[in-house]
Amino acid sequence: MSRKSNWILGLNVSLGALAFRELLRLQPQMYSAASSWTREVEEYLFVPSETAPLLVVLLSFWLVYRRRQALFALPRESGPGWLAALWLAIAIVAFGWSVYTNSPDLQVFALIATVIGGAILWRGKAAVRVLRLPLLLLLFAVPVPSPLLSQLVWLFQSGTAVLSGWYLNWLGIPALVSTHIIRISDQTFQVIEGCSGLRSVETLAMLTVLMVDLFGRRGAHAACLILISIPVAFLMNSLRVLTLILNPHSAIQAIHTAQGIVILMAGLIILYLLDGLLARVFGETSGAAPGQDWSQRSPGPSAPESAVGVPKTFALTACLLVMLLTSFVLPQWDAVANRRGWAMISETVPRDIDDWTSEDLPRPNETLQAIAISQVLNRRYTGSRSDRAVDLFVAVGNHLDRFRSTYSPKTAFPGRGWIIEEEGVRSLRSPDRDVSWIVLRSGTRRLVVYHWYDEPVSLATESLRSLLALDRSPFQRELPIMTFRLATALPERTPESLARAHSRMESLYRRVSRGVGAFKRATKGDAAISEVGALVYPLWERVFRRYPIGRFTQSSEIRGLREETSMA
Image (tube, rainbow, N blue to C red; front, top):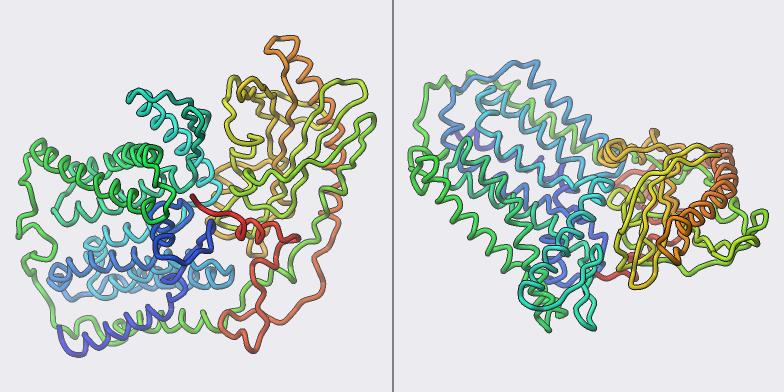
C-alpha cells in the first residue's frame, strides 16, 4: 500500500468520523438519566431501547481489519462507476434525511451505503463480498422500531417470568406467575424491560457473529450457531432473573449489573462448547486454520496502483465532504412551526354522557412508563341504570418519541399482576369496529376489558413509520394514535354476568365514540400553526434557534416520566 493510498485512507476515515459524529455518540437512554458507570453498562447491555453505535462500528472495523490482506489481494480494478455512484447517492440522501428528521440512528444506513460505494470504487464488487459480514454487523446499531419493540418486549417479559417461575417451582419454592409478575410467599417481583432478555439476545447474537468470524466458521455451521444463540440467550436470561430473585443483595446496582454480565459470559461459554460440537457434526477442525482466516488469504492477481484512477479515488472523499457539509447547513424539520393544534381529549369526551356520570381516576403510571404519550384520560363512568361502573382509559400518542410507542400490548392491562383467563374479538357498532376483549383475574377480582386503537393501524405500518422517522417530517400523521381501554368488574364468571358486562361496555362505547369523533374533527379542523420561527440548524444554536424534543409535546408528561422513572 503506497504512501498516497495511506494518506487518502486516513483522510476518508477522519472525514467519516466527523460526518457520522452524531451516530457515534448516540445514546437514547429512555429509562434513566443516571450517569453512573454501572447504570450505563446496565443500559447498554440489557435495556431493549438502547443501542451502542460506537461499539458496533468499532467491532465492524475490527472485522474489516481482519480482512485487510484479502482486500489488498484483490485486483486493483474498480467496479462499475454507475453502481458506485448509485450507492453513494443513496448514502447522501439517507444522511440528509437523518439530519432533516433529527434521527442520528438512521445514519447507519448511510454508513453502510458509503462503505459499499467506496468498496466498489476501490476494488469492485469482490470487495463488497469480502465485507459482507462487517456490513451486516452494522445493522446491530439500528434500534428496533418502538412499536415492534413493545410487542417483543412484552412477549419476552411474559416468557421470562414463566420460565423463571418454572425454575423456582422445580427448586421447591412455590411461585405464582401473572404475566410478567412473579409472586413468592409475601414477596412480589416484576420482570422489567431491562430483564426481559431481548437486549441480551441482541448482545449475545452480536458476540456470536464475532465468534463465527474468529473461528472461521462458514455456511451451515455459522448459521446454526447464530440461530442457537437466540434460545441460549433467552434461557440464560431467565437464569439471571432467578439469581436476582434468590440473591438478597440484587437491589444493589453494581451487583445487579455484575450478575447480568456473568450470565452473559456464561452464555458465551455455552456457545463456545456448542461450536465445538457443531465442528464435529460438520466435520471441521476445532478452530480456524491460518490459511482459512480472512486475514491470511493468499494474494491474487493485481493491477497497477494507477488502475483505479485519481477521480474515482477521490469520489468517496467528495461524498464524505458533502455529508459533512450537510450536517452543518441542512435545516432540521421544525416540529413547532409545523405541528397541528391537536384538541384535548379530556375536553371533547364529556364528563357526563346521557345517564352516565364520571369521576377522575389517578394516573396509571405503571402503564405510562412503557408508552409515549401527549395526553391521558382516565375516568370511571357510572350509569344510573347500572350497579357497575366502567373505567375508560385513553392514551393519545406522542408521535415524535421514536423510542417508545403507544402501540403497546401493555395498555390492555390496568396494572400489575393480572392473569388472562379468556380472550377473543368482538364486533361493535356505531362506529363499526372489531376490538380485543379479555377476562382478567387478580386474586379474587375479575375484569372484562375492551382494548383497541382508534386509527386503523398495523404493527408493520407503525414500525416502518417509526424506523424511517416519517412523523418528524412533512409526512407526519394527521391524527395521533389513540389507545383505548374499557374495563368493568365481573363479579361472577357466568354467561349471564359476562353478557351484562359486555352490555355495559358497549353502551358506554357508543357514547364515548361521539366525544372521540369530536376530538378527531377538532384536530383535523385546526390548521397548522402559521407562526414559523427561524430555521433550525443543527450546530448553529448560537445563531439560529433550536427547539428541543421535549417542547414538541402539548404537556410535560413525557419529561415527567423520564424524571420519575428508575430502572430496577
